[in-house]
Length: 321
Image 1 (cartoon, rainbow, N blue to C red):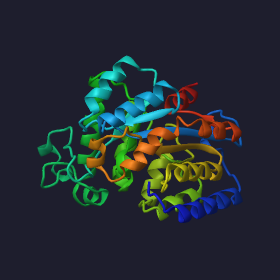
Image 2: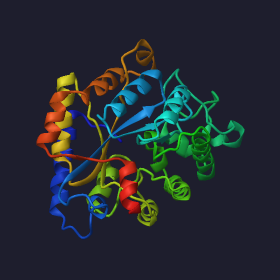
Image 3: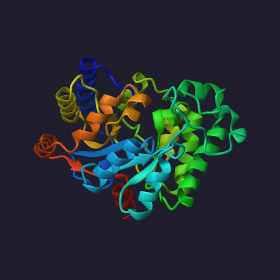
C-alpha cells in the first residue's frame, strides 16, 4: 500500500480511526466472526518480498523460527525462491504463503514470468521481463493472462512441496483492476488457499483505499463481498523513518491508531548487504525492518497494548471449526 510522509501519515490514520469509531457497527468484524475477543486489536506481522534475495530469506527465516512475526510470503519468479522453497519443505508448520508477482520493479535486478512468456505477452515488457509498474500491467495484460500466471506460480509451489498457507499480491497488482481481483479470488477459492482480502463492509475503509490510489469499483466490492474465505478487517504497512528510532516510534503510533479487528501489517525485512544496496534505494528501511521485531522495546510495547497476534493458518483453522 502507499506509504505516506510521516506527518501526513499520522494525521490520516488518526482521522481514519475517528471516522471508523463514529460509524455505528452494523455487522461483526471478521475478528469476531472467527471467535477472537470483541473490541481487541488482532495483528498479523507479515514479511513480504521473501525469495527476492538471500538477505530477505535469511531475515524471514530468523523471524519465523524465533516467533517474532506470524506470517511471510514468497515471490516464486525471483532468484531466491529455490532457497526458501528448500527450507519450506522442512518446516511446514509456519505460515508461509505466496506473494503473487506480476511486476519486476527494479532497474537491473529483474525476472520474467513463471509461465512461458509467449503464453502471456501482455505481462512481458520489451526486455523480456515483467513490467516495472502496476500501471503498465493494467495497460497491457488481460485478466486471462493474469490468471494464467498466478495459477502457474501456485502450481509450481505445490509441485515443489511448498504447500502455501495463503496468497497475496506484490505491489497490490491484483487490486489494480476489478477483473484481476475477480481472477485472484476465484483462484483462491478453487485451491482453497486464503487470499489477502480486506473486508469492504465499512465505507470508511473503502474510502481509505480509494484515496490510497486503488480503483475500488462497485465490481471490485462485489467480488470481495461474494468471496467465501476469511478476510482482514484492515491492512497497512510499517511506516518509514529518517532514523531507526523514528521508524520505531512511527510504528508504535500506527499500532495505537489501528481500529479493532484483524489487521495485517506488512514490512520488507532484509539483511544488510552490498547486493541489497544495488537492488533498491529502500535498503536502509528494509535493514531497519530486519531489526525492529527483535527489539525488546517493541515487544514490551505490544504487551502494554495487549495485542493479540494471529496468522492465516490460525484464521483458516478457526474458519473451518
